[in-house]
Image (tube, rainbow, N blue to C red; front, side):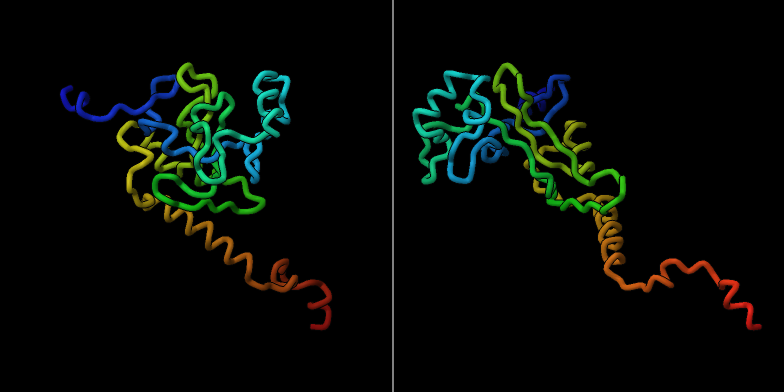
Length: 193
């Protein structure tokens, strides 16, 4: 148990499972509510949720105090009561595996959304998520891996991604309709014999 005292303590989800980081804000990105020009869309779209906050943002022409263009904002992201940073779902935050979806297929995604912080938690109240491939996701939840590890994709993950890439490549190949829907010889083909 001395080792446990020496290791940094990861945050935990509401059920007590490790989320794989000490500080969720180190892995969080821009707020989902911030527009490209630094405006707070939350205060504009949902003024009834927090009238005081919306009035303050309206007085500042909806400028987000944490999203200053020069990086010298009045606030840190954690200071905003309505901060939310959710994943784009394109790449694993731990090993870098890229998502590959096959159109019109119901295959399980390679990447899953992993919560670093849950909306409504007492300490932050912010929802912060990253994408993890399902192999890294299992390792993080088993508490022996961290989101910030320098990791390579699992061999099974690479095989799954390559299988999907091969399926994509085969879709680009050309087949005539006769080749795609070949049902064997027709009666017209056999009448002349």
